[in-house]
Every structure is written in C-alpha cells, then in structure tokens.
Image (cartoon, rainbow, N blue to C red; front, side, top):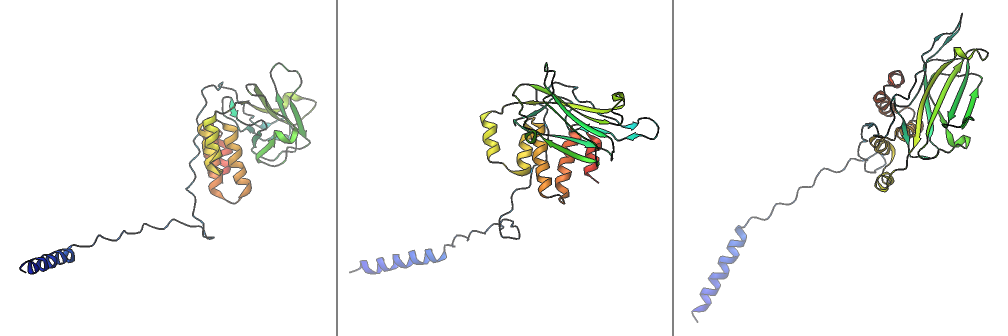
Amino acid sequence: MKTFPVIATTLLLIVSAQAQTPAPPASTPGPAPAQTPDGKAKADPPKRLVYVKPKIASTGTRVDGDGGSRGPGVKVPSIYVLAPNHTGLTSRAQPSLFWYQSGPASTRFELTVIEPKKPKPVLQVGADTAGQPGIHRLPLGKHNVTLTPGILYKWTIALIPDPANRSQDVIASGTIQRTEPDAQFTSALDGAEGLNKASLYASKGFWYDALEVVTNEIDAAPKDKALRLQRAALLDQAGLKDAAASERK
C-alpha cells in the first residue's frame, strides 16, 4: 500500500512541469498581398525592357531620313524606321512595321518591302499626304504579306515632296528577318503577358515583337505614361533618340 503516495507524487510533478513549459508562440501572419480596387491581387511590376542584340544580326543596316529644306518654301520633317542598326528579328509571320515622323507633312508618303533578288516589291503602299508627327504602324497582316523564315527583307519609307524629282525624297530604311524561336522560349512566352512578354522578346533579340507588344499595351491604355516610358527606354537602346524623346513629352 506504500506505492500509492509515490504514484500520486509522480503525477503531480509531471502536471507541474507541463504547466511551467511555455506554449509555442503563435505564428505571426505576414502582410496581406497588395490588391487592386476590385479585390484582385496585384501582379508583379513589369520588368524593364532590356534589348539584347542577337548574335546572328547583320550590322549597319539602318538608314535614318534627315529632313530639311527641299527647294524654296518646301521643308520636310525627318523620318526614322523604328529598328535597330542591325537586322531586327521577329518570330511572327506577319509582324508590324513602325516608324517615327518628327513633324507634320503635306508630302506624299510611300512604304516598300523588298525581298532580295526579286525585282517586284513584296509590298508597296502609299498615301497622298504623310499626315501627323509621331509613331506610326503598318501591320503586314492587313496587306496579306507573310515573311518567310531566314529571308532578310529590307523595308523603306519615303517622304516625296516632288514626285517628278525623286532625288528630293527623304528616305529611311531598315531590315527585318523572321526567325523561329526554340521550344523553351515558346513555352516561356505562353506564361507571359503584357510588358513581361515584351521583356522576354527583347531579352532574346526579337526587336519587332517587343516593340509590337509594348505598343499594343499603349493602344489599350493611351494615357498610361509609364507604358510610354517603357517604349522610350526600348527606343533609346536602338539609338532612336528623337523617337524616344517624343515619348517622354
């Protein structure tokens, strides 16, 4: 009968020890994710567009069209193809071509796309007046023009103050080549949207695709200054200073 006090004492010691053991601290909740006004979680901020020149690009292929006087009382603005000073790449069969015009012009405008060793242009379109300054776009798909992979195309824009004297033209030109992306890059693109997609294109040297994606974003939100600054940064990296400056105004 002497064992009962021993067992009771042991139980009391165990209960006492448990009572003195501090409870583990409750986990502190982290900050709630940022949300948009409609209650959705905000997406990560877009990456800055950093253009990486492709290794296969031919250099020195861009010509800028510096404007100025073309006879008494005729002044023509400058025009620039929005392309790097080497062959710009696209992954698309029907990309868009972009150019910048520094001022208004009442002269005729003409755009031509040429494939090497073919006498007839792939595309030749024109307008009686060049219209307003700023960045302009021509989607090749609207003219049923499809680029063949591996072909280096030259494209030219011209302001024509005197159709009877084409030596007075202000001409700018660049080159474009369609290149098929690899499977890994294609997979990465499938999970990207907006400026993050433009950033992927720029990082792999797909100049025309990066410019098209960021321009689509601007068209969807024309008052968003941050988008124009992103496009300005991309243009700066190609040495297109006048076009970039116009985006920052």
